[in-house]
Image 1 (tube, rainbow, N blue to C red):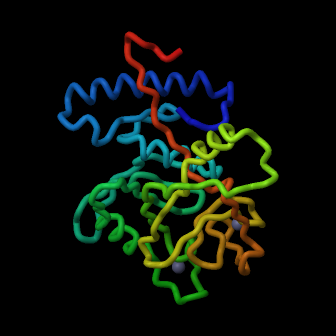
Image 2 (cartoon, protein in one colour):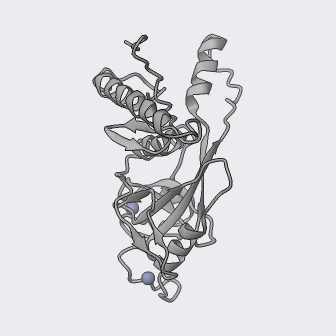
Length: 235
Ligand SMILES: [Zn+2]
Ligand SMILES: [Zn+2]
């Protein structure tokens, strides 16, 4: 369940997701020796392989971007087959989610390099500036609230919002450049940037003028999936 602002409209939906998560996890335990490795998690009706993937979906939602989960199987130039985790069709981005363990990112890197275009610098005419972008999403970095003397809430309320922050999402571009997320001032889309252009509307953003970002908006939304068992329904 989204540990965030409680929206009554979403409660039924979230509970349905939690019940389905519980069912999948029981099934997973029954068929897998490694139940703790990757816990299937349902978010907005989609069954993800892990809570981390479901959390990335919720995080992408918080940016106001549309995602597709594992929409296609790609054959890489090396001949290997690869299923990227997320496609973000509005901004021409693919996202590969990596957990804490040994990262296997070779396929994502190969895919990213195969999608990068060969246009001369500053003269790209592609649908997506520089070609489609492949990002690797890492587990979030922890967040510590700044001391704010204007925050007069009791310490426990501040601590709760600190926990709900979820941490800062981290990602790496497979093009070897830095990629950062922000909101384009022209088209208002949230997008990852690795060039001076908005990926959604292609307009050139000069420095920070065209780009808005804020730590409050750019944070990781954790989906844990409440453990629900038959004896103890979480209602
Ligand atoms: Zn190009
Ligand atoms: Zn734009």
